[in-house]
Amino acid sequence: MTEAVSSKQPNIVMIVADDHGREAVGCYGNPVVSTPNIDSLAASGVRFDNAFCTTASCSASRSVILSGLHNHTNRTFGLIHDPHNFSMSSHVTTLPKLMKQAGYRTGRMGKKHYQPEALFPFDFDPPEWGTDEDILRQRDDLWLAGRCEEFVQGESPYFLYWCSHDPHRNWERADHPLRPDDFGNPRTPFPGDEETPFDPEEVIVPPWLADLPEVRAEIAEYYQSIARLDRGVGRLIDLIANAGSDRDTVILYLSDNGGAFPVAKTTLYDPGMQLPLIVSTIPAANKGDSPENGTGTEPVSSAAVSSSGVSCEALVSWADLAPTVLDLAGAGELGAAMFGESLRPLLEHPESPGRDHVFASHCFHQVTNYYPMRVVRTHRWKFIYNIAWKLDFPTASDIHMSASWQATLRETGTLGLREVDTYLHRPRFELYDLEADPLELHNLADVPEQAEQIAEFVTLVQNFQIETSDPWFHKWIYE
Picture 1 (spheres, rainbow, N blue to C red):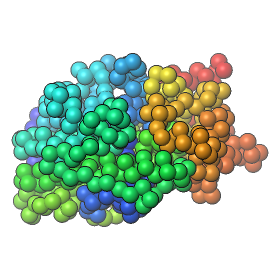
Picture 2 (cartoon, rainbow, N blue to C red):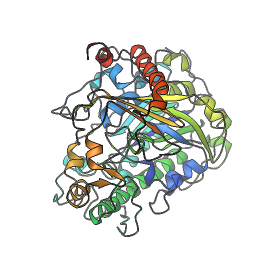
Picture 3 (spheres, rainbow, N blue to C red):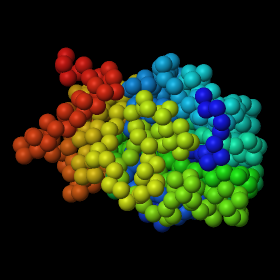
Picture 4 (cartoon, rainbow, N blue to C red):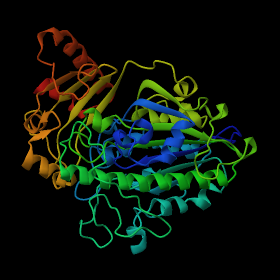
């Protein structure tokens, strides 16, 4: 336990979106989607251009974010809710518990998606599902931000884990009176808010999807949900700035996995795992005027974000997030048992090259979506080990029922330039030269000239599995 709270410890706010792909963020190159508040964080901080979740499934990814351990290590193999019921192992010491040890007041708002809850002892922890009004307003990100006002005005330092339900596909039926489309956009705006509709003809269809009317319509709904999320981010920034803390406040913005479309969510192709990660700082109140609308944040070196409006090309992963938060809190030693490493050196020197590779590990999504994969990602290469490669690749229920997927099956049978049959039936190994083949279409694993490199990647994966106590390591021995 930290005996005395240091005056240099910043407040830390981690904002985690739900299924927000990097292709739908303004500061990552999309000129149509509306994300001015997220973009403002990038303009005043560090934008990571090679940031990767380690598994593209909601609960499993969040388990990595909150533990610094891969999901096969912490044992959250897939979704935690009924009927799937995966759960973190009781031996894991989670980030909120460690932040309390570091002298922080801790809070959570929005989506939980973790269990058992006893491992996550947040001080401020309102029920995710409370009254009927609470349930209906879970997509109201202005409201979710407003519920944190008292928390951010309280004693510092604090750690706030703020998780939107947007832009996840809708958990209610599409004909629910307040949920008219598949991305939870309300039929009428939430109180005090104004919805931002998008023209399907103007959205950008990413190259890994079929350009069909159904796809464009769903992307327009996706953008609308993202715009509502962005407004919530802006209000949260306002509340933090106007609270007038005497400490810097470091804000991290990220998503748990890619968008809920084929080739993205539940896959470890880049659309599923290469995600937004932005780190910025709201200065302490005694260092200047607070911004009025969440767009005037300026980074300061005392919080380690010493660069403004720069990008970092280093390879980073969600296993690095918990060690980073602890390091920023001045308690980096508490993350010594974690697999990831602190990003603080990159925040101080974004031009640094960083590591050579990162790992990813997917096991399940729903309990019926068994398809374990282990991945090595370098700047140039992607190596995928499909452990259950003889099985068809399973489609998550929300994607399977979507108009985008059903229209693709009915109309084209192709996902951009990728055949659906190739997407569903995968070989044991996949190897992609991302410089020549950024869409991961041409598998080089069987090319004789790549045999030596395949062997090197296999050794990397095996060593990673041993180091992280991966239950699937035995597949190399027995199968």
